[in-house]
Image 1 (cartoon, one colour):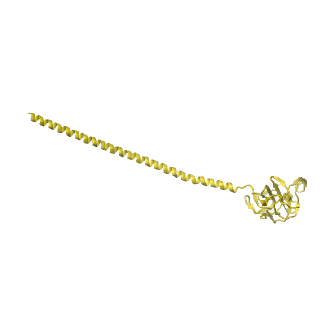
Image 2 (image 1 turned 135 degrees about the vertical axis):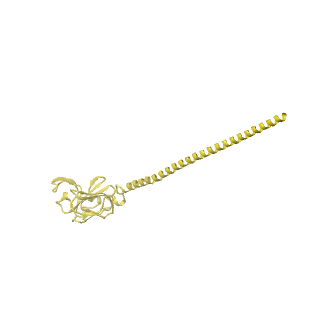
Length: 233
């Protein structure tokens, strides 16, 4: 009976050992699959995150590359515009009023001189000053620049026909009035003696022979063209 009892106990111990082993194996499988599932999940998350970050970076770079050339182009256009819109002629040794050499704009002959006093104007039938010099000429004669200069304006006037305004530097601005046509345009540069147009007529002074009505101002004040050019009447 004692032997039978001992065999029964050995059988129970083996069963318990088998159960413990199975439990350990089952726990190991649970831990393994749990770890694998977590790793897979983390890999998926990491992959999605990496893709999103990469997309955002690429988008940002694309926007930057598109914007920068446009900004540079706009700045370049602004710079070019500022450069081309010059408003005054530079001062040089060759364009000093009363001192430098100036050419006549037409023939040297004068039909009507400069006057700040009021004189009777037969054409306009009133008394007025004549802040200009009228140089004698013939229709279609060449009208020339008295010095290097920058063309400030070209326009038509009811009293003076076509007018060309040139900045000759050092504050001297000349108005060539009574032209039939102009060979220059606003913003262009001329050299001394260059043809700027052809002679036409001056409606405001129609009772005089064909002539060029020539006005000059120095720093905005009317001056005698002959004096400022160092010429005599």
